[in-house]
Length: 96
Length: 299
Ligand SMILES: Cc1ncc(C[n+]2csc(CCOP(=O)(O)OP(=O)(O)O)c2C)c(N)n1
Ligand code: SF4
Ligand code: SF4
Ligand code: SF4
Image (cartoon, each protein chain N blue to C red):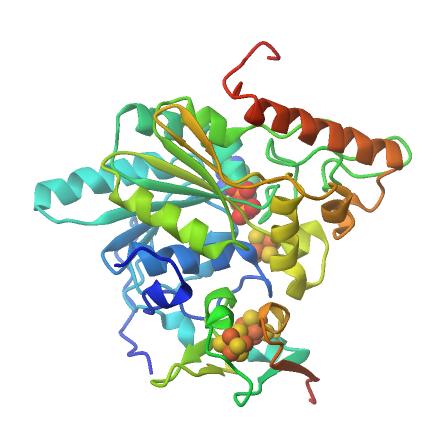
């Protein structure tokens, strides 16, 4: 998990300065999702295309190199599902 | 870092987190994420006003590297200041300008040209989404011919943008520095160019076609496919200009229609207009193939 530091505003004439790296990692953009990508790891060939192509850093690789979707960020754009060379990312309608 | 032959050669440390305000399927943010994998931790990102500015909504940032936004017209000037300050402090760092086409082609061209003339050591990536995207899809000189934008709207008396796109990679190449075009659908090619640009001592320019679901009007998941079609149809040729010599890296294998029909911004096109775009692309390719890249009599 990202360590969150405090924010500082550097004086009235300065521009706001953000001193917490990746603090946006606390924002839940998963609520935007209409469709949910679901990876079938039994068919995955670990090519890492989905990891590279995801605009939102929502796919992470575990220590075995297997991709997983972080649904906190995933906006459901479906780029990953379209680009997977073995088509092992299914699309399910989000139930909410 | 090895030679980037496969995805396995790409460093895996992602320096851009999720949780940003970018639209789903945004090509611009994908391009920044990919570039940072190569640029690495010791990078300062300099941004001009645009969609990528809204990544860092106070008090949040998705970046794990320093980032500065100054104004739309002066990212290269800001970068120059950072480069000098780092030199004074004896710090080694990479400076990456990540700027939109509006900032690059139009509002910030002067600052970019001047920074290149001063031979500043920075990487400049222009993410070209074909319009002033952040303010609501207004026409820029990067907008393709006949595209429907909010300032070139299609209606009874207008057929969209009447002007051809400015050839920015050529203009920057004419400065004598490294200049290249890239596509997100060919990530290894893009990242090899980023690596090359990072290693060059002096200015290096990469122009990345950044698919934009919101302004090009297509389903968010189709972006990579559309970027691939842009290359295959020859609308977006891949090349490098090194020391004034053009190295063409892609080929034109499909009709432009295959690219145009994927996007709402071209859905009004008649057969004649499509043919006019095809003729323009063909003419451009003749120029590449005959080695007359620098011929200027048409201007
Ligand atoms: C001198 C000036 N004029 C206008 C603006 C308003 N403005 C802010 S972002 C933006 C759009 C920039 O377009 P582009 O560089 O193509 O990046 P994109 O929004 O497409 O990411 C504009 C016009 C500004 N900030 N400064
Ligand atoms: S749907 Fe889009 S945001 Fe979600 S994991 Fe796939 S590429 Fe990433
Ligand atoms: S793109 Fe498909 S095959 Fe490749 S790593 Fe992702 S899920 Fe696995
Ligand atoms: S308008 Fe286009 S470039 Fe801007 S954030 Fe949305 S998809 Fe990305």
